Length: 94
Image (cartoon, rainbow, N blue to C red; front, side):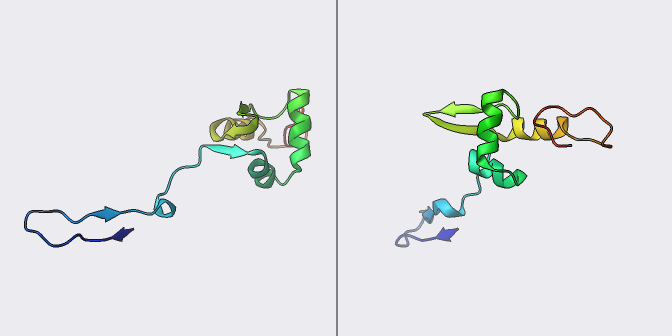
């Protein structure tokens, strides 16, 4: 954060300017490329999963596909396995 002060006057607070890069905003949505990198899979796999109706829920905003982080994390929890003999859901991690 950068603090700049205006000309000194008694009783006046210093002006504070904050650059947008310094603001930490929690990321609540992932683009297709972000999710493919997170999971180490091809963006084309996510596209195919959307056509087949598998994988996490997604939003289509202004023609762009985005995934809510809460849906991605829920899908990851649902795909969690303790052994390879457990049932595998289509599109889920084994």
